[in-house]
Amino acid sequence: MAEKAARVLTLLTDYGAGGPFVGALHAVACRLAPEVRVIDLDHSVPPHDVRVGALRLERFVAHLPRGVHVAVVDPGVGTTRRPVAVRSGEQFFVGPDNGLLAWALDAAGGAVAAVEISAGTPRPSAGARTFDGRDVFVPAGCHLARGLPLESLGPPLDPATLVRLERPEARRLDDGALVLEVAQVDVFGNLQFAGDARDAASLGLVPGDLLAIETADGRRLAARYGTAFADVGQGDLVLLVDSDGRLALARNRGRAVDALGLPPDSAVVVRARALVDPRARDPHRRQSDEGP
Image 1: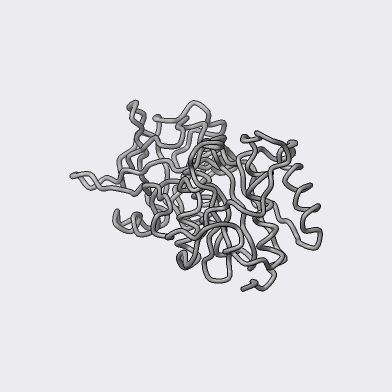
Image 2: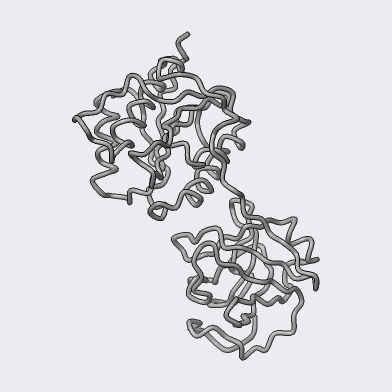
């Protein structure tokens, strides 16, 4: 049975904004479905970082129009990993079956049907196996956006067999401190953690509270708990709940990542109402020596 045409195709990849790979996706979409609107969600996912791609796709779900959402962070391209198309309510998600789609599908209400893509997506050249975004996923997405039925793309598969990633979670230490894993770093240098407002509440934090951020290499930096970047002085650190509902460490008009220098998968310890030596400053702070 034909689907109602979606007329919208969104793209999220690790291809890098402005490069030829993104241009190729647009060119294919224009050729196959010129009537479909293409929206670039994000092409700045760190290369090959499936987990960050999954987090970013998940955060878009609440704001997505009804349509087809193609996501490609695919270090296993050309291998036996499955190319899939999945329906959740009125939304379709298309991409590699490597965990990239799973959290977004949960946020959209759960997968109700899925297929392994094998039909309707001829490759432009024999043996080309390194650019499935162009050759498989966008063509499949265009077919769905034009109203072709999901089952026309390939054999059905059980949505319960889709690959899932382990989701990082905050954890408490015996002394009550909170361990937060760095989930991702945004373009402003803010560190988003695997934790949310409930974890802040578990520490009894209220806006204005002084706290300490401890790193594995023994550094101890002062911050305050707040609700906006400007809740602290320029150059100071603030722990807040960000626009995704996750705990994040930011620097007012600066880059928090410069203070900690931690990549994703690293962890920090947060201690509430800690007595923090105001001289325990990070070397990148450029403003006064006043405490937060």
